[in-house]
View 1 (cartoon, helix red, strand yellow):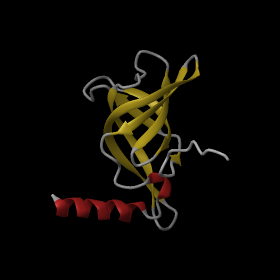
View 2 (tube, helix red, strand yellow):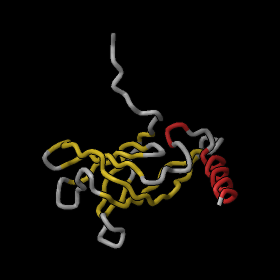
View 3 (cartoon, one colour):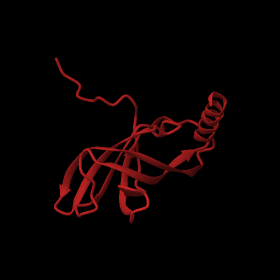
Length: 131
């Protein structure tokens, strides 16, 4: 019997785009490179220096996610999310891969989107109605 070690409940969107992060968003921001993202977590690479986050650390991030429309066009949706670092893996002596779990999920599933703009708009209306 084969065991499936995959624990992800949502497909991730794989893309390369800058991500900015810091422990406090008023601090100097460090830059990383987005690897993949879901509505609740992201993976990115960064330099293996003093700005690289540590497991358990809380950071704030700023990043953009491709938001696809019905005609295969896309815009970039901008987000700021805080979260905690779940894992930091060594890619090379100079590069680390970081996994962050967001404190607040994105308003859509980036890897499973059909019409992102409509999905974000519907969720924003629903949030406005429940507040």
